[in-house]
Image: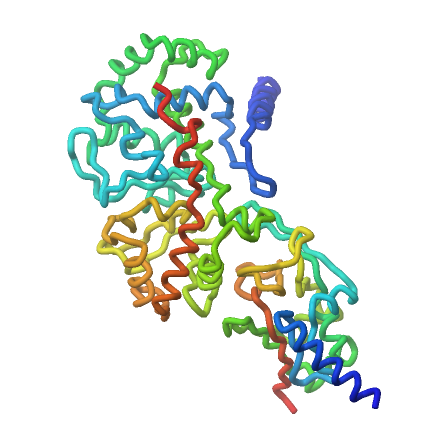
Length: 314
Length: 159
C-alpha cells in the first residue's frame, strides 16, 4: 500500500514536472503542492471556473470581478465589494506571481495554500464575497450540468469517482492562478535579458534609488526578482498593523494602494514613505520621485494585462 | 623620464576613459590600488553561486583576500598583534558602508567566501548592481553584499 502510494505521488510529481510553465531563462519554477499537480486541462478548467458568475449567490460576480486581468488582477477599488454589495475591510490583492507567495492574503502568515484560500471568497460570510455558503450543492448541480465542465472535470481529475466537488473546484482555480506569472516586463528585459534599452534613462536612475539603502531603499522589503516580502508595520496606511509587502510587479496599474486602499497614487505612496511612517525617512527631489515612478512603471508587463491565456473563456 | 611618460599616459587614459568605473583600495595598505574590470580579469578568478528567492546567480570575480594581498595587507602568519585590530570599510557610490575585520577575510583564519564580483552569469555587472559588488554568501542577510562598490579602505585601529 505504501509503495503504491509512493508510486502515485511520484507519478503526480512527474505530471507537474512535465507542465510547461513557459518561464524566461533563469527564473525559478513555482512550488506546486503534491496533492494538486498541474496539467493544461486543469488550468483550462480553472480558467472557466474563475470567470463563471454562477459561482456567486446572485450570479453577479465571479473571481474575475475583483481580480480583473486589465488591472493586473486587482479591482481598482480601495476596498473590495462582494456580490451582495458588502464591503470588505481590505483591498483586493493582485494574483500576479501568487504561485511564488510564501503566504497569502494581507495579514495571515499561516495561510499558504491557494486551494484553501479559494474557499474564503466562496464561502466567507464576514463579509459575504461570493456568498456560496449554504448553496454549495446547488452550484455543484450547475457545474455537473454544464457541458464545458462535464468534459473538463473528468480530464482534469482522472481516476476519481466523483470529480464534481468543491475541493476539485478549488484545486482547478488554484492551478489556473498559479499560471498567472509576470516575468517579462521591460525591466526584466533590461535586468535579466540583454536589452539595455528596454527601459528609459529615468527608469534606470529610479532603479538606483529603489536599490539604494542610503536613498529610498524600497528593495529592503520588496525584495528579490518578485519585489515582494513578508509582513511589516510601515505606518503608511490608515489602518495600522503588520501587512504583507506585496509584489510591485505591475504596481502602476493596481491603484489605490496599501492594504486598505488609503493611498491614491504612487506619488502619494512615495511621499508617505519618504516622510518616514514607522520606517526610515528619506529625501527625494521631485526629479528623483519622477525617476522612481518611471522605474516602477517599467515593472508593468503589458502583455499580461491582455494575454488571452488568462482572459474570459466564456 | 619614463616615470613622467607613464604619468602622462595615465593622465591621458583618465581623460580618454572618463566613464571607466573602478574600485579604490586605500588606507593602511602598502600599495594603494585603483582596480578596473581589466585589472580584475588578470587576477586569480573565483566564483560563487547564490540563490535569491529561488533565482540562481553565478557571480565571478576575485576573492577579497586576493585584492587585499595585492595591496600588501598583512595576511596569514603576518596577520597578528596590532594588525588584527584592522578592518576593511567597503563603500558604495551612494555612500552605503559596511565593515569586515581582516580576520574574517583571511583564509588562514576562516573558510569564508567573500567575492569582489564583476560579472553575474557571465555578463558584466551593471545598473543597480554597479560595475562591481561584494558577494558574501555565508552572511544570512544580504546587507554586507554591497552593490555599487567603489571603495575598500583598510583601517588599522591600533597603531
